[in-house]
Image (cartoon, rainbow, N blue to C red; front, side):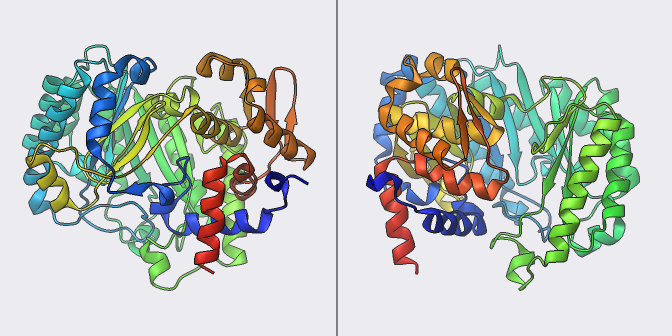
Length: 452
């Protein structure tokens, strides 16, 4: 049997487990972040942006900005940030410098979407918030941007900030509630009050921003099924545009994990029951919700546009700020330094603060697209042909691997589409590795051997 199709289930399952235990290595990108190269020549990235703007940005260009500060560390959080908000102004000065660097490289390329996340973007005070958004509009081409999305922690939001956001073009706000149960909030070290949360949601809507996303989490320490159902029932009564219910992932970067806590079988059963109740409540409230999808919508088209474009169209996006990732379609994936001092000093020297990256080719781009589309459930062969200027059948090695997965009962291949038969995230993460390019598969084998 061909080496490609030897049974590597155990190796791939172990690799997926290790990657998802540490979210900085999580398999949300292809090729996996752990295999990106350090010390890359960023001049090559700049040259590719300047010399090939049409080929890189002929799709839908998005922008992500990471505001890396929080006022506290919630025990469930696995994302990178800093508690020291005294350095916020130093960071913002460097961020404006990074905007200037890209303004020169992009040459006024229009942005379709902007996503501002963190950290906690709403931790900026009113002066900083206004200055930040004004610089964003002045330095980059947002004239035709369809969506500017802003993540907010209810506790650091007020009506004055909401007006600043509205007046400077923000038309979607993601309100990270997670839970409104006082006992759960104390357990996870999160400070917020239910009445203030409700008031902020009402204030956002009163300001004329109708595209409101609400985030909740299942499986939090101390959270009962009844507590979660009460939170979701309350939120549904507000009729936000969309609600995302995330499952708490106790990765090695969470305080929960570092304190020696792990999920029990009873915890997993409780989380599954919460997911089932969420699906039931979404249906009763008239929200559009697909099985296995974490987001429910009151009407189509209210997703975070940049994320949708990146997954649906394999589009390019630029990441600004520490820890942020960028994707130049057909050319690069790369990540900024997460060290705040290194980030600031790099920008002061007129250099992009790039820490790691990896070169891309057409095959890696297609594998990335298939990887993400199969998680959503299916791949359109017509979409592949439109995006990659060639039918899927012309990519022979990839087609052979797809057929192998079909022989294993993991896919259903039809004339116009390929449907995933994989029932869980774990199964998807394991078996989609059979699609990976030879060099990435070899790195996986080497990684597992070196870390046995």
